[in-house]
Length: 279
Image (cartoon, rainbow, N blue to C red):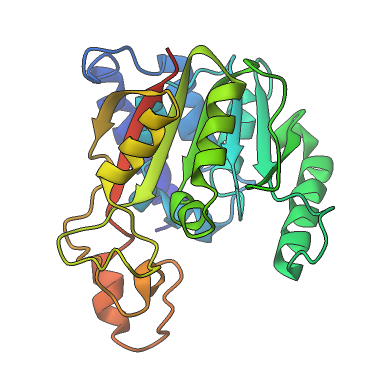
């Protein structure tokens, strides 16, 4: 999708979002100014065409509006990876809020090279593109051995995109959710987007998919209350039973040219979108 086409799509999305800003299970969503800022950041010149092309699958305006993002919040993004959502969140929070990237603690021994390289790329972008990312900060999230998200009750919102499967594999999910609960202020929001297991998913295999009931169970065990669910990021075409796991689908396309047209037609994974609140 071209940048101009993305801008046109964002304009339509803004109109739709504005009409339903208070329609999330009776709870107020994002204010219109923040929604506009999300939309502009999602197609900004600081983003690659490749990242902008993912907007149609990841629905950043609708997703962040559902979570109730405001531009004056302190927001922690857990394991930002390639900075896809960082490129949207940090500019929105730049002037009135605070963006914090909770990423791997590279001071730990025997860290994989990709983590060190990713940390450097992120730090370099924060420094070299300060006019875009603002006073972005970096916190530690190498669960369960090294977690330091900040002072207790210092954040308004914690967001995690497609990371729960890794924490479950590493037997670290309880420590992660406990840390999320501790760092959030009372009434703070935990927003979760995660590849969702289906009827055909083998839950005994590490394939990137997690049952929605399992995520809800984990979050509520940590003390959170499930406030609302959304099908914003649902994809009924995803059968969630591929030999290569969720990485068979875009954007990874693990199988390269094998059945490429089929997987491109499916698009990105079926995802749960959940909003929890700390009482």
